[in-house]
Amino acid sequence: MKAELLYEGKAKKVYRSTIDPNKLVLAYKNDATAFNGKKKDTYVGKGRLNNEISSLIFPYLHECGIESHFIQKLSDTEQLVHETKIVPLEVVVRNVATGSITKRLGFKEKTLFSPPLVELFYKNDRLEDPLINDDHALLLTDIRTQELREIKVKALEINTALREFFQSIQLLLVDFKLEFGRLPDGRIVLSDEISPDTCRLWDIETNQKMDKDVFRLGTGNLILVYEQILQRLEARV
Ligand code: C5P
Image 1 (tube, helix red, strand yellow):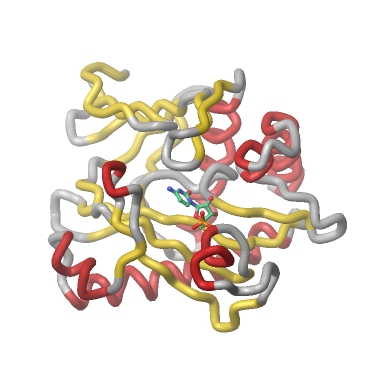
Image 2 (cartoon, rainbow, N blue to C red):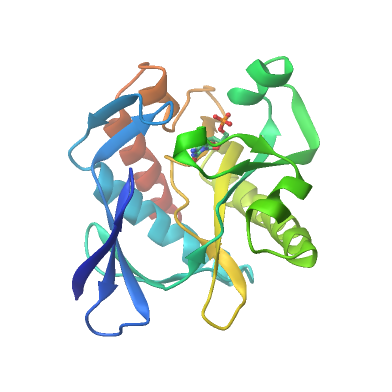
């Protein structure tokens, strides 16, 4: 089903589908990276876990009326998606202060953001994904003012839907990163992945971190944690 390798990122490879050249195959890798690639490791099973988890999240979001590039899971590590041109923005939504915002702006760890905070980062490895404002985003990408507004509204809708989703498996959605892409017809839809690599998830009872922070901070076994999330999700559906 997959053929020409179009792009290899830190966590996924992107192929053009041999069956339908308008569609892409995303192959989730076992590599884990943090701090803009400065910390790296490989975890057997990570690609499968992120593929399984995101293949449950995207259909849930579709049910909530949120369109994305996702079509279907193809195999343990692969999913079929619509081809989009990725908008080079990382849209971060925060419900609770932790991570870069505590260092950058001095928010006290665990400060609640109500309403949730939306931040934009310029997706650029060379520049190490800097925080940018709306005017920068309009200059640095091909999106229009109205589209940027829609992206931010959509990010908050996704936050509402995902908070409920994760709450149903006893996890607090602390923050997460989204990417959007433009379909050939011009519409912008949710793209990339949503997984414990791109979300911070804290166990509601124990406060245990159940996401890539266990790798970033070296505080736990990434595979065990991701497996627990998948088990909880499978018990839910
Ligand atoms: O590091 P920071 O606190 O800004 O991360 C905010 C959220 O965005 C976290 O959930 C993190 O996992 C996610 N993120 C990501 N990819 C990046 C940067 C952040 O998925 N390149």
